[in-house]
Image 1 (cartoon, each protein chain N blue to C red):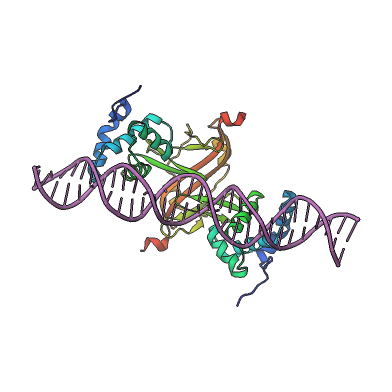
Image 2 (image 1 turned 120 degrees about the vertical axis):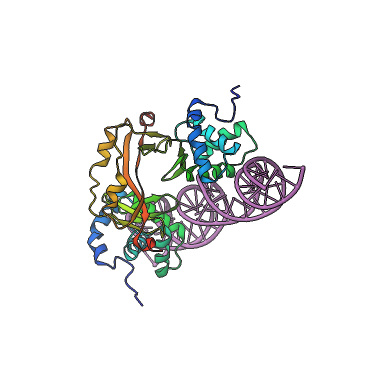
Length: 153
Length: 153
DNA sequence: TGCTCGATCAATAACCGTTCCTGATTTGCA
DNA sequence: TGCAAATCAGGAACGGTTATTGATCGAGCA
């Protein structure tokens, strides 16, 4: 039975802890145990879990947590820049502890999301800003395809 | 009262008509009056209407049409490559008579979608294909920002 | 002209991911 | 310790979309 501490059990999260606390302090939100649990679950599940995945992981340690609470926590975490949220066509949004610009690809077979290495995202936003009168808020590549496993089926 | 013919009233659609008929013939689907009406509405509304927008335009000429029918028609039209469908975060999907690769930007203020000129989309898919073991099915840029009008508010 | 059968339709229920609402609980701070 | 504000759990509601149903249409044929 892996009954770890629900507060920042892992090395990775410990390393980030100061940064996260700082972001909370600056934002005015409080770093509650539920929000810690959501961060913990994101790290534990790994990859790019959906809100549902996070909910299941959180619930395993604290069965009283509601799905709505997880959504609330995720939206706070996204707002203050601790996590990033990506939405894909015809599938639930997926959350990621990696907030730096990078490229993700989603498998249209199994829905899993993983990162594409070796492709320079660069300053896509400023590049596009030059070609439009819009005030560009975000620019990202949405890539979808079949993962190696689903290609075999 | 602009009571045009409901079947391919416009010059643009007339020009496309042969191509569209060909796609229908090859697919095995029939080009019914409802599907024509949906195409007509797409052209009449212009830009990148949502399913709801199309529904309203179709209903103006044929009040008996149901929203579900419009969704069915749109999905058939997309399937056979007559129109393209794009999904954005936190907003309904938008449909487009332009099926060639191009760049769209969506205003996070009013939700309108327009095209970004002068940016080369190029062979994004093949470029990305080289950096992943996935079988890339689609790669597109999702750009969001504030349109000039919404910037002033 | 009427018949048959498959394709398409209108209408509506159901679905899914997400947000909103409410009253209860916890927290930070004096 | 007590109080106000923030956060929570639980569940209802929402919006966009899809699935289901039985009715209708229409091409091909006798």
